[in-house]
Length: 360
Image 1 (cartoon, helix red, strand yellow):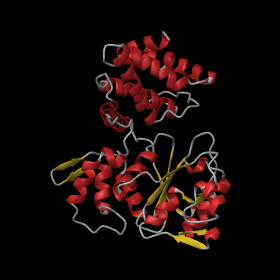
Image 2 (image 1 turned 45 degrees about the vertical axis):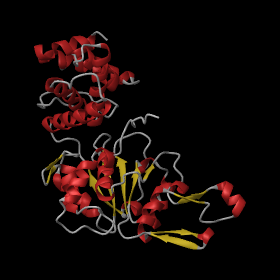
Image 3 (image 1 turned 90 degrees about the vertical axis):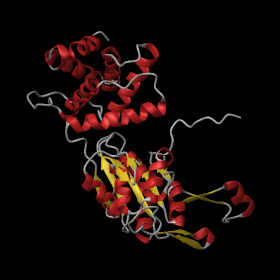
């Protein structure tokens, strides 16, 4: 039977050759429970060379922030990555776990419905009724398994959990052990255990973390790209990766198209034009770098499936309106004002995109 490919490969699978090259070229001391040294982890994240192998950058941003994140995981404190939606928090979290442990799959996804049992442990109730509390009936969470194995666990969108669920982590992160009174034992974390959590600063449906829980973390705030050039570089790098992974039937967008999308997003996000000369009303939606990438991937799919295989202004226009307007009538008015007062006045280079946007 033919084996089908998975839609999205984990970081440790997608970049297995780079991880192997870094391990083979390792010359520094490797901490207990880690697969490579902190310097090699930094090279894996920011890019560089391992012997003759070129290591592609996974995160384009402030080197010092990544150094702080990696160094935190060497200590007894956990790591909290904070930032606006689309600032590569989950992406960085996954790649840190992949580089350090070779396994980024120990994940708890925080939602309004996340319970304390999904953080600590739960039971197989069929076995619990048949046998009573036993090791066989114990269902271990990703965090429990990480403690048991001395590995790194990830907690995505921790601020979406109810405050009482978040607080279940306080004693776990302080004592580095989970008590299991039903079995009259406790599980202590082995050396190498840590937790990487992510949290949004600007989004709907988030809860404030308690001061007690925050004290258990070392916080690293991931900013939006500092300028247009940095954002264009991030988007183009990710587009090349996604185009190869998804096998999109279109060529990569021209730099001018990427620059236009990033310009529109940055201006509507910041509330002013790139040159600071004119104020712009901001939308309800967080127009992040990640959303710009998604928009351009969708434009490539549209151009490849129903166009000429090259992203045109008409493809961008449809995707821009869908990303910016959503369901908010207020956003529709802001977008129309932006088209008339900003885009229309930018001259011939933007004329086709303006016409395509107005025709929708």
